[in-house]
Image (cartoon, rainbow, N blue to C red; front, side):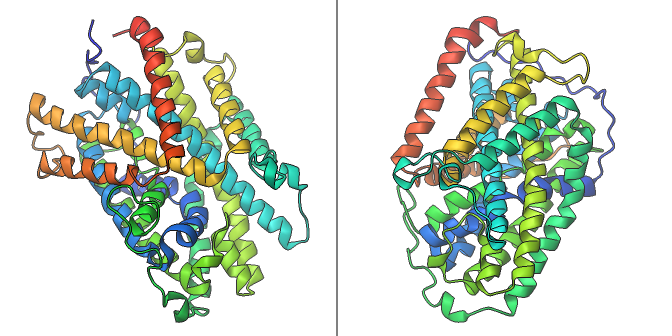
Length: 461
């Protein structure tokens, strides 16, 4: 048996109903991407890494994500019945790379769920503070005894609620998540329109206070900002996870990914420019940046509206991510990589209840004790790592299977573009601190150990 044995993935017709149109696919991608990244991370990135030049960081991140997005597009068109990095790596490269792709995906989604919950808690605390209400300090921040905080209680409570909902019936809640895309846009439109009347060009005078940074190994600057803002684009890969339900996936998946990415990149660029024009970048190191900026200029009604929308929409993103995470655990258990307990389905609601409980507990613990910035960094570096694996897998796929068919999406300039993507991803990864790299290294070692001592022996393929 080889650690590079491949799973035979056929291109037969799916048993699921193909009912999602291109418009549905674009809205799905936008809904998944527009969340914690734009409502929270923008402030931290501007204040500590890039300054007003954050708009350039956003565009660099968009280019990096765009390269990986078209790799997803070709895989989705060639394997329309196997969505996600795990399935693509299993079909093209082999078992161990597939497991590591799946393992890193679990880490990404778990920390993304925790990050969204933390962002939700930050906006709720900001809204409560505007009415003169505050939680006791000990339960209002991540574990940091020197600052008097021991647990961030609100994110923990919301994840308990989310887990309870997913154990019952999450279908209606997931549908609601799609409808709230319009509400998200309305909140950001309010911010942009109000902000345009309060711009102070002097705030842009020192446009790039931290400089461009370094291509490799930088800690501040535009490149470091780009590596953190990468977090804001996470979710585009969710389109490929629903490939079985999309009409004409060979055409609509690539189009959906690219259109959603262009729309979100444009929105992020405008928001980051207005944000740093309204408030000096040095004052933006807060977790509810968009609402904070509106309060700073004295437009409380708009700040409260943005906070309410963020609270409503972030919790639904949290639900959809937790849903996807529990299904990833279920899939890996079904293929033998994790204990079979996690593939058991409840008799009443037909959901993987043990997988849901596991992911809910771990996400709640993470959101309660780790800071939003640390979780975002681990999410980013893990995502960049599996995108490197995907780029390598595309080169292998072309070598073994040749060019795509006439009706399938074709990535241009292979292997040049995948190699360029690998270089850019490694550049972004090098921007992170040794603490982030240590956490990532430990995660990789744990994942490899699970495969070596359990997954390899119990794999069903």
